[in-house]
Image 1: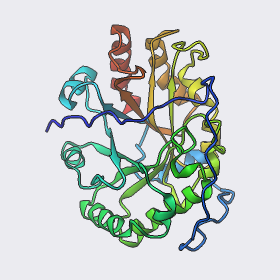
Image 2 (image 1 turned 90 degrees about the vertical axis):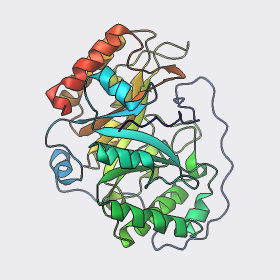
Image 3 (image 1 turned 60 degrees about the horizontal axis):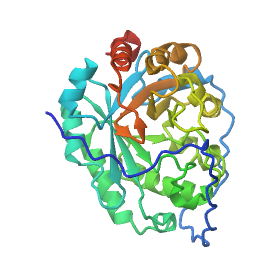
Length: 332
């Protein structure tokens, strides 16, 4: 079944390499905590298992290689899959935390019917995270959890991604962010929605107004996959440098790998300006094999937004993407 793609999410994806320094957010007001240990230390206990071994037991990890995912912002699903030459395994979509049904949406239903894994990016637009912690949205969250359980299928939920970026979900207050994440997670677990696979996905670079990404980590028992969003902006701005696929994720990967969980690149793409986008794409699989073995899924942000992220921005880029998508490593 062909599903019209959701509209492009109305949010910027500037990186910390911009010349302008973002204005620091005002300090949040005091938070009334209703959850036990919600503001406990985020430092995870030392793991006794090697990271590559630990990831093998996590949900939705492929038997080998990595899953290919896609955001359909450049045509319908049918048109895009024909362009790619295959059906990606993961489908990224965006939802508003309060106003959208991010579990029982028609897109998720169609994805399951067509053998895709939904990657549900939940955006808490205009939400005070203190209200989440104190139960204001519990009725809605219990309904979402019950509906998720009823689906009986595993799917990713990526709540408040890029919290260390310029969005600043939760006011760039890691303790409040962690408390909100844990509160939502605990409701789903209490309602038996254990088929939800929780993906925690910071930006690849910290915004100047944000604490470091790992300060927001909710804790090992609250995260199934860690993740990362990152783009090669090319030389489209005088302050930008061309970054290889390896360069984009080099800073964050070791920090995530230390958690010993599978990693999903929940958003990524490359511009054309300043280098060869085809070469950038051709280097993805070798880099995953040789440098980033814990990355078990990658999701391409296929849309002409801010930069020429679309896979067919040039004939050479499309040919490289088609070749990469059909490689056995990407589980075609």
